[in-house]
Image (cartoon, rainbow, N blue to C red):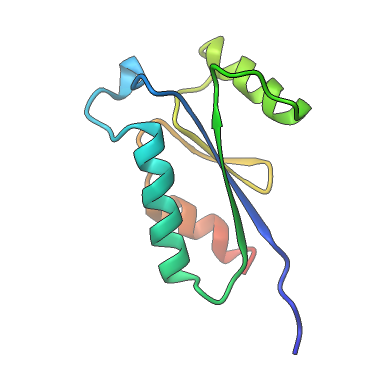
Length: 105
């Protein structure tokens, strides 16, 4: 029985909803929704879900850099990365994430 690699899914966000995403769910709600939806669809696959608050200090350099880019308004939040690659930002579309995940699972 082969073991599948862990897919890292990171959601960057803040408690305050992004000004450009007023009608979208909060970052934390997006994180919980993705966790449930992807676990249900890819139950046999191993995901590592991480939520990163962009307003808190991070110990990981990659996360610190991404938070800085979001705070400098280079990207909207919530921002989702899959294995370190940006998969969506602002109003997250599940279909776009599925396309990225199909390449990995």
